[in-house]
Image (tube, rainbow, N blue to C red):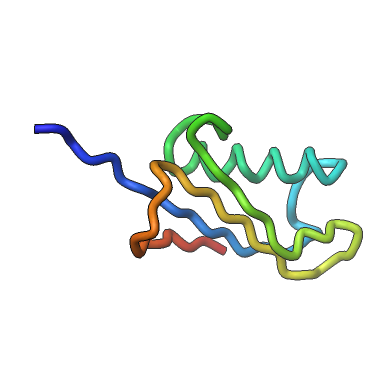
Length: 85
């Protein structure tokens, strides 16, 4: 019997001035890796992970921003979300 791979979705809400790093890409990479390290004990892997950022306008301080990381096969099913702030 094969074990069905599960999809894990992690959503993080932060403020733009709290995200570490210099450039936009560096800030996104730091946060993607931090999410993956906390949840899966590894760095972000574009071969198996997907990500999306919303409100990541790092030129502005104190703005809400959201980062979503998905792991697992793509599906149209309802996926539970692990939410962090």
